[in-house]
Length: 323
Image 1: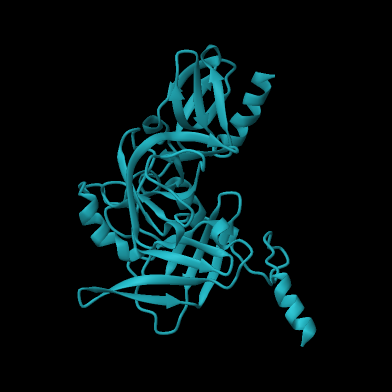
Image 2 (image 1 turned 90 degrees about the vertical axis):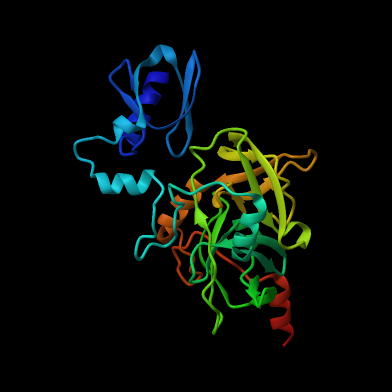
């Protein structure tokens, strides 16, 4: 049974670039190796994680060797696997710079705080962050689930002080319920160019590295919490999350988790309520995938093929009926 399953996964994942596990039955599995133990190897193939016994493995080819395939083009692979040194013209978001240096939380918060926003709906509130100057921002799907009346509160730096401004013309661009991600855009007339953040990489991070979060826990906007990465591969409900000791509370959802270079490495989305220091974030690689394939997750309530249907709350129907 194991060999049959591996054969199916090998055919389905052959298009993925990354580490390659060569099996003794001449099949292979491509993906990202999460852990290697004396008796088994765990590999992420994109939609699930396989645990392969060592007895079934012939050899393992690392990602650096796998990308040197004859038909691969170097520029495309570089853009997919390494941080960019400069923003590509026309790109939707910017990745972190390879030569960026680590700085203190105090310095980074002063620089990045303006790009972190509070997301409000009639049902509650959460956090978010701008990914480009045109007003596109990321938050959690569950923050806006069931609502189209969304407002964004931004603190602009003006004359050395913070000027609080609320934007109410916010459109849902794309969303993925299963990844708990949503892409919004501020479309208020006369809105300025917004400050934005760099997207980093969580894959190269090590357990114990320092991180910090900015968000609006319980509505307390611009709250900063610091901690470390507890584990990079915490499996919950079939998905892998970053676990962090940085305090995450209701209202932090959708906010950024930064490394010490000021790059977003995750999107905070949940915590274990009966414990302390047990927060979780969606790895930034999942966010980049969502952004790069945003057309596949585009939201349009007038599109009959749209998998997500937003209905007016019952109170609105009652109001219409009484008029």
